[in-house]
Image 1 (spheres, helix red, strand yellow):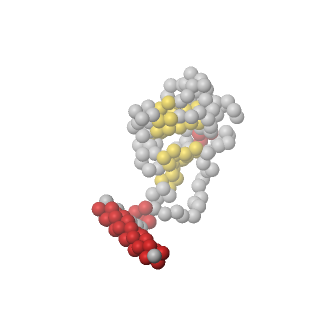
Image 2 (spheres, rainbow, N blue to C red):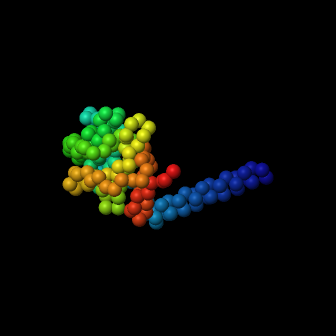
Image 3 (cartoon, rainbow, N blue to C red):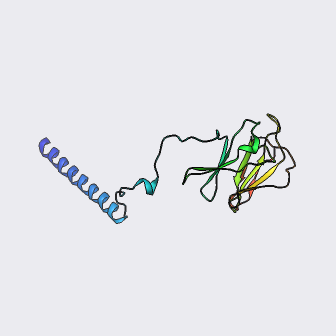
Length: 169
């Protein structure tokens, strides 16, 4: 009797596994989910070894044109090291800011894609009231209205409507 019950359970278990396997296969096929086709590095990119940059980047922001705006510190370099890097061809283009010491700024992108860069370095630990906009179409800096309070490493966030916000503490 025990052998009959064991045989009955094994048959039902085998049937259960077959049904589950068939349902999974059916669900996969009907959902259109198929194994991914092989993709080339041209389609998905690839990692490469390190490349040499002219500066150690302290700040960087990806611009709408695909270039990367970056600048370094310490304070003696200020905005003079602002540089654009074009990942497509590896070219570096100097775009110095001759007004604001860009070390210790905060930045975000405006709704139109321009970089909004605020604060900066007066002396270590003390910020600036400067607000700058970098236009990646013309590669130019515009000093805008000063902030009410100086900022050193401020946080700037792009809001869903495209405006930028900076906490006032």
